[in-house]
Image (tube, rainbow, N blue to C red):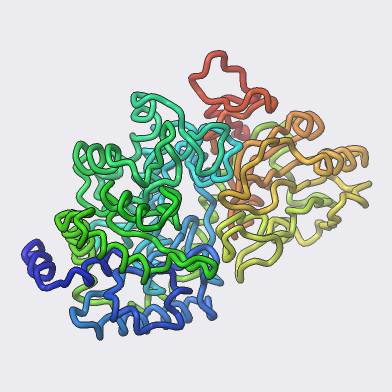
Length: 578
């Protein structure tokens, strides 16, 4: 019945309507032209990293998606819209949502069941706002920490990425896509994005096919076995050929050899990189196997959704793109929409809207934080700290900084410091909550005033960033952070360092200067999970998802390299005595 319905609908469609279904427009491009949703039979809308609506509360999102879906239902064929968004560590475009640890932290948990819970909670919050498609999980295997997207990867080992990526797909999609709380996963970015030379974002992965298959393809094989129905293609090249125009990998390998029956979506303006003129970009990408094209809103460019539709119609009429290729793409898109139950009901369940930022979801996030922290050093068993100390002095730019805890892709695409999102608990606030009423907690960003305290806690690390701007040539801990640790040590007190980062940093001197050192990655909104480890309400169980280098000269450094001499090996992590 499902196949018959899609074939019947496909037979009714004009060429323009078919191509409309292959078009994913950014909301900013249509917000002043909402009639285009029906007029062009647009198949999908997305909200890019910085293209939120005016009211980003859960209720505001739900009202907006409902409005847009009603407009789509007024079109000739009443084909529902498929809304997509980057909810990469919780529903991170919604004010008040729970922000979970980024994937690098989830990789440290080594816990597929917990990762599935995280994904399911994210799915509930997404469906509560009327958005049923998540551009996640990223199953890139990050092989060079200079890459600004390292924190979006579960780790350097393909087996770990496959195991946890599959768990994430299961959590998002549930037992069947038509469930009210299920969300379509979009596994990304196919393929080899984590292995580009020098960790350059959108760069070139230089390896033979055997290495590409061994390192970067296992996660996709496993995700497909577990029902992944959409895949986002990568910006990167493989040996100089852009993936968005790579027919061999997209059609022959993915759709043929791996029998992928879902649909392929492009990344943000990624097809624009294939050629000097937009029409050639369209021709190459569609013939290579792309089914849906993500078209951003960029006022300085003419390459909007209207132009895409016009040019692709011309390409078909000129015989440069076969009608059979168009039908195949649209058939895939319609089939997935039907599997999701969108043709039957697009209404939002209010009980799911109520889950956004809920206590239950925050408890899942807190447990994820607990299990993600990796204890690298604990001299003289300083940790866990006593909740009954006379005075604890807290210092560092990350101590009372929710935005720094969350990192990139938190309300803003690149993220930002400070109170970036409603709700949540900073590490300083969590310390106040954890200690006894008699314990005096003092704080200074620069570490002054620590003299006489029983212990110092220094929270330092990276300022928020996302792809592109996050690429770094030097991963050394900033000199100011090391100076802060030394200042606290010179106050004559033991010092615990909590490092907030999206990757392993060169922190050899900081480790020597401190008495205990916790890699907290980017834990998200639930700072209590960090305090739980500091004060012994939970024992650290996290294991390094990356080999920790001694110096920049060792990067790239990965398990299995010869020679292999990291500061801390892949899988390292201390715990407390029973």
